[in-house]
Length: 271
Image 1: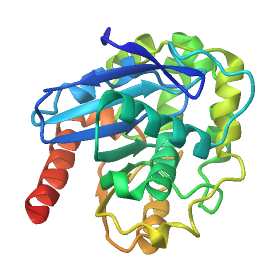
Image 2 (image 1 turned 30 degrees about the vertical axis):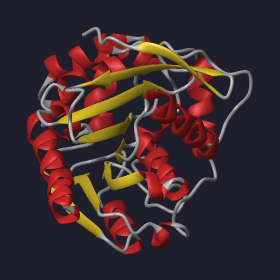
Image 3 (image 1 turned 180 degrees about the vertical axis):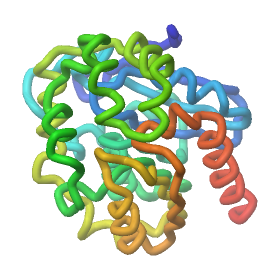
């Protein structure tokens, strides 16, 4: 599906940014997507949000965001995202990160905690201090081929993602066709951003109400990583989802409802 978006420039880098949902919503989610995934891939998910505005984006080198000249770290991206929020006139956000984007979300919460209401993490880990997934799965993740070749995605998707994807080829096909692939260098930069990175030692400083969602059948990010995150975050709630790595799409309505419940419960507490 096509999502209406705009080009914004932060610190000399162009970003493709989409602002979705009701403009008068009380809460705004900053949505950090998985590696190689463009904003189009989250269309089936964001459609289920009823009371919340969402800001989604293509990381530099993905989708419609041009690849930068040199590699970057998560902290470079968080500063640019903070600048983009300023340009949009958005104050506080609820930061939501999926898989690779969970690392970016953690770094944003570390760098700009005062700008965050809550932190929501899905199918992710604290970086290099984690329990790794299946080696065969990780080797397939090291290539952007699944984003540039829909047929390859259909071939390896069930093995990579686990859970309902193994039985729902139609959903996997729709996901593959929604991809707006960047170039190989852009994908490599995303891999490098996470290389050697960990939030493990800084997470205890993050006092935000945090919801951690992990797939019980996730071959890519084993659910034990959720327990590691929960042990480091002082105000965390850990919940298991009966699915694999792609539960944000396979159980889109349920996950959207749970996230809205979580952030609006926080709004009531704050109120």
